[in-house]
Image (cartoon, rainbow, N blue to C red; front, side, top):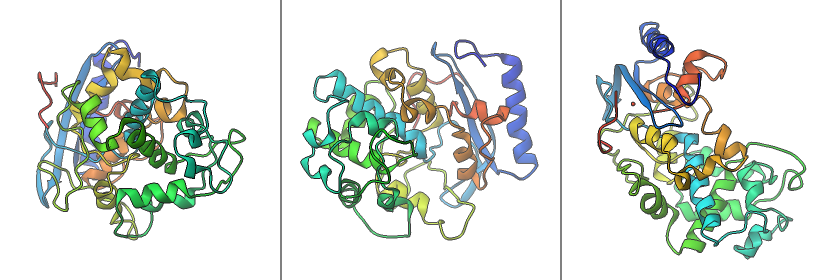
Length: 309
């Protein structure tokens, strides 16, 4: 599907595929959206979702855990640092966070972190591990203190701990928390009211309860949300996600200007699987499936003037 035109025939097919997922019991319901680079959007809802433990018809204003589609938001924050002259993507991260150099990481650059080539050990990915009570700064400390799985630039491995490091770059170079920075520099200017971190013990209004497929990881959705995970924690509406990825403003599409896995491939991965998981089951991860390709532009029938979240 072209990024510059929304094909009504294909969209009708995708909407029917969503309906079939509900009919077949693969998911209970969800919100589907498509956005293109020209700012065009298309949305659909189907079935029911769980709101505070109660099954309700899926609505455009419902909020979902953003999970790994958070990465392009964090990448945008980091690239705005570079655009503002506060960060050199090719300078060692230790230029800004000296203690990051522990355990042989002195050569790791921000570009390495953005492109998942820094070699950070995934043992630091504590937030996606066993249930625990930790603050964001605890997770940041773990990422700063981790070792290397391979030398920087000598390999590739999907790396979420690097986003804790980039969150700390935002903390230090902006002089404010990364959670406030994403609100002030992205959400507010783009009128994405719902795109923010919600870390309270109680679920935010309109939040769709996320469900995992396994047993050991049932705690993960709430742990990720409450930790303000910079690689997975915000809870936007689908409409807000669409507006972010389709905005014509170059400054807010900065994450797509860098040739990096985190800022492009993550944005185009089948995020709809999390729409499905949030509804009770997984739709699968095959990027060649038509449904997954369209769900990849996670998002919601001509969006309102402002985000309803």
